[in-house]
Image 1: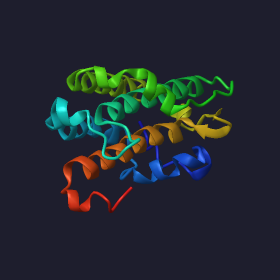
Image 2 (image 1 turned 135 degrees about the horizontal axis):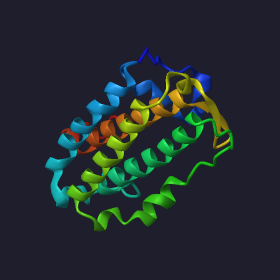
Image 3 (image 1 turned 60 degrees about the vertical axis):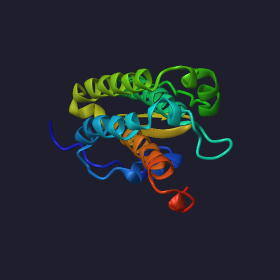
Image 4 (image 1 turned 90 degrees about the horizontal axis):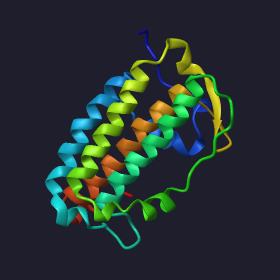
Length: 182
């Protein structure tokens, strides 16, 4: 496969700019693959009790965050599939807080949520590894914004990196530094 390259700003929704900016390499398939082990290694040691904590009132628990990451990736992967296959039907976004509220993540084991995260990511990797080169720049409309397959895949990786950093900062750093970043 030839180089996919980093998407331009007109290839993803404006709210995804920060996510895409988190992606540290243009080798996006390798980034996606590397994230699996890093996320599991970060979260698993928190255990059941700590994974039910939210770092502030109104914020998601660790379990809810992992569930949200899987849900979001599933949705973005579905959008990716549709656009990669040439479907130009505009697709709506989703209300993330409603999904989290209805997911029941806090009632599931942390291990089960991590296994689901790994399965979802492996599915995403299978999809993107099999994409023909010409499909990476195919465009569609998601939530009213023009996007490309490439832009969506970088958004998936950047979304995971955003939550990884939040989990790392809020749950694994000393309490004295917890208020420094949002």
